[in-house]
Length: 117
Image 1 (spheres, rainbow, N blue to C red):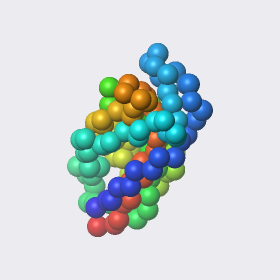
Image 2 (cartoon, rainbow, N blue to C red; image 1 turned 90 degrees about the horizontal axis):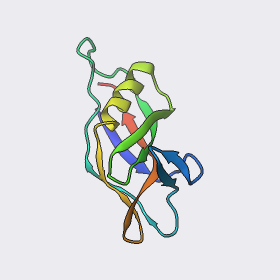
Image 3 (spheres, helix red, strand yellow; image 1 turned 120 degrees about the horizontal axis):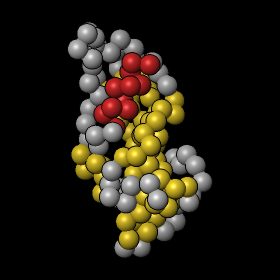
C-alpha cells in the first residue's frame, strides 16, 4: 500500500533544457501541473508485498505536453521500492503547468509513501 503527496519543491534552476524545452521552477506566474493519470507502484512478481515503510521522493520534469521526463530518485528508501516508484511515475500524465495561457515544462517532486503489507 502507498499514499501520495505532490510537493511543489523545485530541484534545479529555471531554464535548464530538457528535450530542447525551457524548464521553469514553480513560482509566481506559473500555474502548477495537475495529475490526470496516476499509476500506482506495483510489486514485482517474485515479491510478497512491500515490507518496509517510508517515503520515496521522485524528481521529474513535467513537459509542456504533460509527460514525465528525467524521472529520478531524490530520496531513496530501498533499491527495489525506488524502482517501482520510478516505473509508476513514468506512466503518469499531467495537465501541464502554464505561464499565462501557454503550457510550459516545470520541475517538481512527488512523494510516494509506502506502508508495509
